[in-house]
Length: 274
Image (cartoon, rainbow, N blue to C red; front, side, top):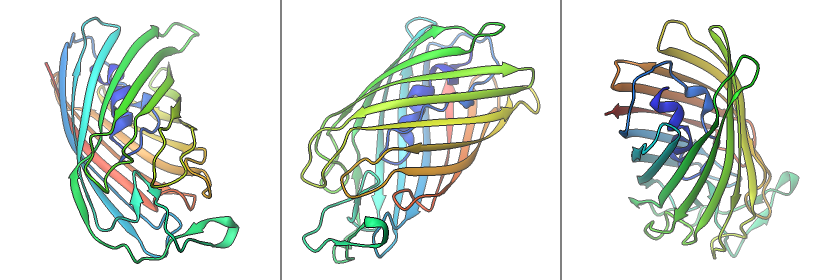
């Protein structure tokens, strides 16, 4: 059983300040027993998020994962963040005294707070558990629980705890495979925006070109995460490549299809398995 399948709950935390969908499609075929993994990468997102100017966010997430049993994994992730302005926090436009409603009721913020911000983001702790292994007709199911701790510096986090629960499924059909996942986030109160609890999910299809090399295409989205904005939707592709028994390369590129989503988002990472 691959490490990355066990780590999918952790990888969903790496997408630029959102704990988005668990990347169930990133399963690799391997019987290697792994008890520890570390991963480093980068994620880049750019978009207006309903503002009048574009916001660019660079994240360099570092994560560690420990597997005390073949079914149970425990993870920690913290990103280093750089953003060209402070109009957006964790992908959400922050409140502004002179907010104006634009087309479709989307709240548009003026570009008067344009100071670049950087520093460490929020620490995220995850617990994943393999509920059911894949059978002839049944998919593999994995549960997720996570907590976001408000460790980020000013301008890089909401200053509140978030709690997340989720479920991910994968099913293979020869070289083809289908994946789907869903999470529900209980957001803590913050002075930056009127936070709402929200659901997010992802689904898609992939193909194993050669053993260990799996490209896939999928769509992911979320309900509104704050009052005054709509939901998000992104279409994108992913690539997972087992360079060796101990090194995995992962990359993705998404195109935003909604005002509240980034216009473009992508990244890559290397995982070292022990």
